[in-house]
Length: 284
Length: 322
Image (cartoon, rainbow over all chains, first blue to last red; front, side):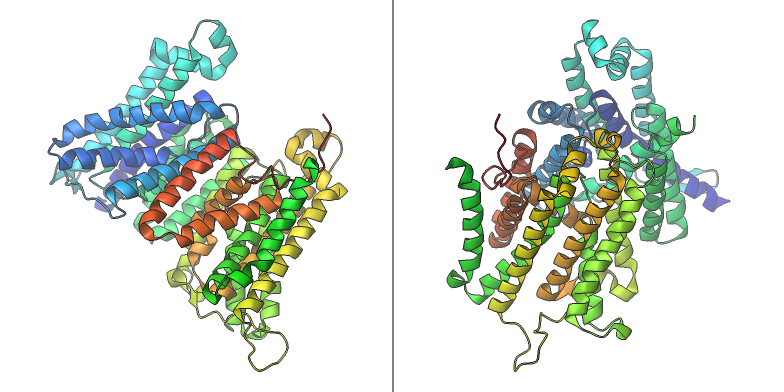
């Protein structure tokens, strides 16, 4: 019983953090058809923001607030200098953002060196939950991730801005002629999507190895989640992250992590190949 | 006169490579021979991406398959096959082609997938195969296979190992043969069909062409070329490891080809030589800046100059009067 609770909690926390990264990708894709290969590096920038600020004596929770701001600003720059020039060329967005991901990674290596940076756990200790001792900080991660995902959902489906965003997604020209400033929307969406990745990186930073290669480790599962769930839909992102994150955690508990990864990736490839619309739209 | 400039430049490029041994010592020559092998690899991607328009993020799967097959055969891990190098290269080419064919069936068969879906699926396939290779003890696991014998002459003589110069000219000849084969192919009606698929797949299908078969054959061919490059690489480098079959090399070759110019075969080769040469020559410290510069250059090329650095000056296709 204990082991089931433990695996369940692990799966849940992985799914929630994956969901944060995935949400950013889905919003950016849905809004501007941009496939952002540099999303993993934005995640990494969030973690490095925390590392840098912590080293200069800023308390962890302030760092956590600073990360989305820093990464959001980085997103704005990226949008201005790269992304806006490749709108409407989906394949080129993949390539341009891939170049970006290499450039950001190299900059981090040049500034911080290739070695991993460690970040102290801000909430040490564990909590007894349903009969198992569970690391307290993981529970914090889950709460934060769930709150952020919920907030994103509310903004998109319950606010005026969200209404405009959805209008642009469903018909850009029409939304533009009705007075929505689509250019500003693009900019804002890309910044918010980046900020979500940044905050995810910041939240996760005490639990994982913060090094220049960390981006890819999150990018691929996040991408698979987006495509498995279905592009263009927030519910799809939840389903996708649930499928990928849940399967990975459950399998990892029973076998070597590399084997679990192989199985999950193969499963995802099958789903993407045979249900290219994604699970959410494909089976409705 | 201006129209013939690309032809002159292409010839000059070939001549430069042919005369390079005069100016280089043995060590540098073997380095250049390795770069030429990467050039063959770049040709395979340039063909499938630049000519047919299929953006494959897993091209190293075929290169790695070729390298591993070559290593397994020449190290005698497959005893019933003997240890012949020629057989090794042949099997490397065919095995990589086979893998490409199977992957191609999976990707293009039925309704098929294109664009971003195809890119992500091939990328994931490369990651899966890299991890699986690292877990497979028979092919050496994470450590790979060491001591792959260098290239030898097929006929007996005193020193059966090819000298640096002979290796160089062998690789150069293979590169030239593959280049002219692919160039010839783009000039045939089949090449025109591939170009049609690149510019509008749906319209080509409606015109009654079997697009799936054409793509499958092109993918198969591209896989074979990559496998041949992989086989040669294994013999030159003497060592194969899971990195050769995975994600990192797949994206690297993409950058070489894009920087050189994806639409022109020879430009892709030049791109591979330039980018790899920079990586090899510069020391660790500056090398980091070189990689940064490559990444930034790659962005600039994708955004504003899709023809790459050499795409325009080496473009052999007849100019249209417009």
